Length: 153
Length: 153
DNA sequence: TATTGTTATACTCTATAACTATA
DNA sequence: TATAGTTATAGAGTATAACAATA
Image 1: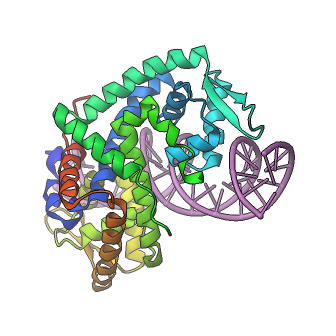
Image 2 (image 1 turned 90 degrees about the vertical axis):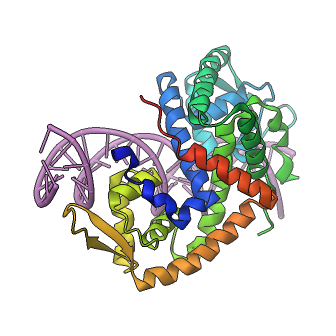
């Protein structure tokens, strides 16, 4: 009965707030994903950086920070760790010597393949309650919310 | 042009992963909400506890932890702070002397009214890209994901 | 024996400011 | 003057383990 002991709180007003629901969904989903990525010594954040480094877009750290909604200083630490493990490298950008292009090594690509499988498993765990059509709907709604232009101050 | 500098990363595979989109949406939304709740000296987590304390359901700390997907030890600290500020009290549960019923004081209810307005403003900022119908859709999809029964191990 | 709340501890994530080298 | 990356620091969030009181 432990599992159901908080179910009566669903009648509270908070349970209708989308922010709260998104926070809880993300919290549950991240826990699943971290558990499945753990054996690869990745977490959701380092996985995200590795995934973008594998995209052949050669993102700069600034682009990573903006896309992942992190501070630039956080990206430094994430790239440091992946570079130390020889999964990505900081390549010089010939057009701007201030910038690093973050690109995956062969080992990085190999690990990403396994990590992608883990991420997909975590996603299907997290979305087990939704039909394929509903997953598409959710993806499109979230995409618009996630990348909505920030309102001016 | 700074705002658009990472837009080319949308073509990366990561941009289609629902977990990633949910994490980014939550991250942006939480930042908005914390900014609007800041003047009331609340954050999203303490706001959530206050909201449930205002529900007249008298939740126990165990129920709060389960509903908010927090560890019980985190709830201790959140309730401590709200109690110190005389916004909630720990009432004895006559049916189980181990449990505290967390209930809002008059001051807690008064602050919650203001906080609810801030939370609603944050939500409408965060969901500006969606129509009313789409907001309902998103709420229902998230609700099912957020409270899906955890798969067995 | 199991559960509620508590304390303690460690680690991860978030946010800010200051600095450097380039532009 | 502004931007990319870096360093340092502090505070918020997450996760575990152990304990006392109670069931």
